[in-house]
Image 1: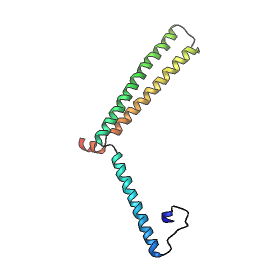
Image 2 (image 1 turned 90 degrees about the vertical axis):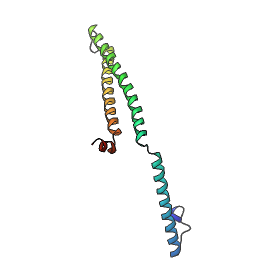
Image 3 (image 1 turned 180 degrees about the vertical axis):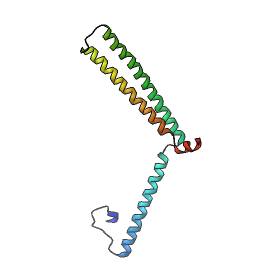
Image 4 (image 1 turned 135 degrees about the vertical axis):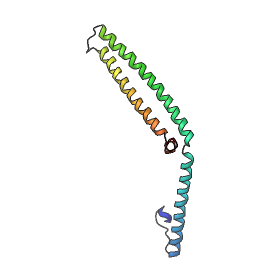
Amino acid sequence: TFTTIGYGDFTPSTYCGRTIASIIGLFGILATALLITVLSQKLLMNRWEKYVHSFVLNVELAKKRKIQAANIIKFAFQVWHLKRKNVSLSSVLYLQAQRRLFQSIHSIHEIKQKQGRQVDNCVDQIDIISVQ
């Protein structure tokens, strides 16, 4: 079948037919490649769009970081308050507060890493060359 689509019940049998089928198949492949290239270029963000996108992501990460910093303070105060009240270190309240504190610390480390990667992704080779 033409360009291997179908059941194979119709195939070119002469050299001229095979040549024409091959040329048309190659033309279809080239047209598809051109279409994909044009669409991918249209969907790519330009330099300023990348800056705006990274700025918005960085603002969101900064908000999350502030929330986690507040949580760290809150849970550290809870742990300190429970220790001060001489609550058993194996009590449910103490363990929950301590677990939340450690989760918040872990979350803020992840957010810091994401912010660092965000800054690294924002800098292009053009920016590096222009600085030098």
